[in-house]
Image (cartoon, rainbow, N blue to C red; front, top):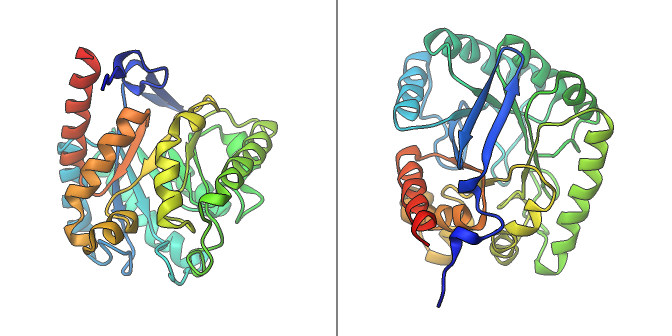
Length: 292
């Protein structure tokens, strides 16, 4: 078997990913690592682990020290069956932490995991640099116009349904084209509003069967055809746990395996709980690419 990754047309290691902000930019040749910081008490893996500013600062310092390029902060749990908190609660959770982290780490690149335009606007005004929207602009029709006007990097993710019901009737492999039709439509909408810095996230684990999740991972080359960076979030998700019959707490090894596959498939950004292991996977994949 000839694994000729070096000449692969979707080799993310030969690409330079650059995001521009109002007062600076983030640029790196090769894939980026996005570290997850959950402020929610009920997230599926690390809910409630960081209950105060001290623990949040310490964890953020650890993520940065281990090599995270971006820190993604979420204040609304989006695990299956999650109850979505209101906009005021979300903003009240986020704002003091965004302010605190920017004071502690002035050069930090903060991404805000929100599907609400008003929350996105407040956090960008407070100094955050990116928006990560699990709904790809579907939950808040005003998001596209805001992203177009502000021109901040924007992660457009696919979800089937809502967090509270997305796994009740998940999409299967027969619905693969539905995912691409979603991006065809939403990308066109956002471009028409002036958005330029889009990032595509297939939404693995969000309203999809295990089989469709693996099919999407194998089809990253099709997502690359959109011409935007690809973000993949696999960290400790059920597509690992169900196959291996383990809990999320035991899924680091499986996560690293799938992150490695995603990198070799062309992923530009990995969204992870475990930054050190993702950075190591990236380093080893780079060697495979270099010598293939």
